[in-house]
Amino acid sequence: MRGYRLYFRSLEGGIERRHDFAADDDAAAMRVAARRRNGHAMELWEGARMVRQWPAKHRPVPDITAQFSLSA
Image 1 (cartoon, rainbow, N blue to C red):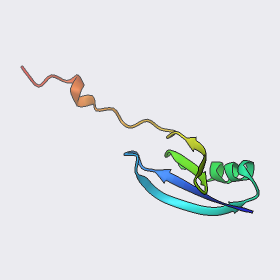
Image 2 (tube, rainbow, N blue to C red):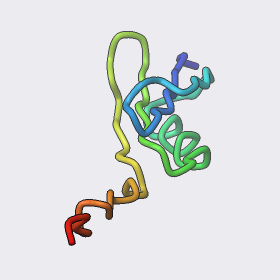
Image 3 (tube, helix red, strand yellow):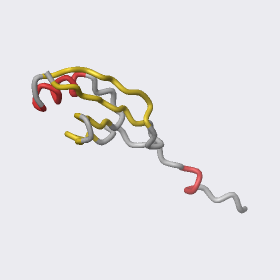
Protein backbone atom coordinates (compact mmCIF):
# COMPACT_ATOMS: atom_id res chain seq x y z
CA MET A 1 0.00 0.00 0.00
CA ARG A 2 1.17 3.49 -0.84
CA GLY A 3 0.31 6.74 0.91
CA TYR A 4 -1.71 9.35 -1.00
CA ARG A 5 -2.90 12.88 -0.21
CA LEU A 6 -5.98 14.44 -1.74
CA TYR A 7 -6.08 18.23 -1.57
CA PHE A 8 -9.36 20.09 -1.97
CA ARG A 9 -8.92 23.60 -3.39
CA SER A 10 -11.07 26.60 -2.50
CA LEU A 11 -12.56 28.79 -5.21
CA GLU A 12 -9.68 31.20 -4.57
CA GLY A 13 -7.15 28.42 -5.23
CA GLY A 14 -5.91 27.82 -1.69
CA ILE A 15 -5.99 24.46 0.06
CA GLU A 16 -9.33 24.08 1.81
CA ARG A 17 -8.67 20.67 3.35
CA ARG A 18 -6.72 17.45 2.86
CA HIS A 19 -7.53 13.74 3.02
CA ASP A 20 -4.72 11.21 3.60
CA PHE A 21 -5.30 7.58 2.64
CA ALA A 22 -3.57 4.42 1.46
CA ALA A 23 -4.19 2.64 -1.84
CA ASP A 24 -2.59 -0.18 -3.81
CA ASP A 25 -1.80 1.93 -6.88
CA ASP A 26 -2.66 5.14 -8.74
CA ALA A 27 -5.82 3.67 -10.30
CA ALA A 28 -7.21 2.68 -6.89
CA ALA A 29 -6.27 6.09 -5.48
CA MET A 30 -8.09 7.86 -8.32
CA ARG A 31 -11.23 5.81 -7.60
CA VAL A 32 -11.08 6.92 -3.94
CA ALA A 33 -10.63 10.53 -5.06
CA ALA A 34 -13.56 10.33 -7.49
CA ARG A 35 -15.86 9.19 -4.67
CA ARG A 36 -14.81 12.18 -2.54
CA ARG A 37 -15.34 14.76 -5.29
CA ASN A 38 -17.27 17.72 -3.93
CA GLY A 39 -17.28 20.07 -6.92
CA HIS A 40 -14.13 21.94 -5.96
CA ALA A 41 -10.82 21.53 -7.73
CA MET A 42 -8.74 18.65 -6.34
CA GLU A 43 -5.15 17.42 -6.53
CA LEU A 44 -4.02 13.86 -5.84
CA TRP A 45 -0.43 13.37 -4.68
CA GLU A 46 1.76 10.40 -3.81
CA GLY A 47 4.79 11.76 -1.99
CA ALA A 48 6.29 14.57 -4.08
CA ARG A 49 4.59 13.31 -7.27
CA MET A 50 1.31 14.79 -8.46
CA VAL A 51 -0.84 11.96 -9.79
CA ARG A 52 -3.80 13.94 -11.14
CA GLN A 53 -5.68 17.22 -10.97
CA TRP A 54 -9.43 17.73 -11.26
CA PRO A 55 -10.82 21.16 -12.17
CA ALA A 56 -13.74 22.65 -10.29
CA LYS A 57 -17.07 21.27 -11.51
CA HIS A 58 -18.88 24.57 -11.21
CA ARG A 59 -18.04 28.02 -12.44
CA PRO A 60 -17.96 31.04 -10.12
CA VAL A 61 -21.03 33.24 -10.24
CA PRO A 62 -20.37 36.03 -12.76
CA ASP A 63 -20.34 39.66 -11.67
CA ILE A 64 -23.49 41.01 -13.30
CA THR A 65 -23.06 44.55 -11.97
CA ALA A 66 -20.84 45.35 -14.95
CA GLN A 67 -23.87 44.83 -17.21
CA PHE A 68 -25.81 47.73 -15.67
CA SER A 69 -25.05 51.38 -16.19
CA LEU A 70 -25.48 53.59 -13.15
CA SER A 71 -25.54 56.81 -15.20
CA ALA A 72 -28.91 58.27 -16.10
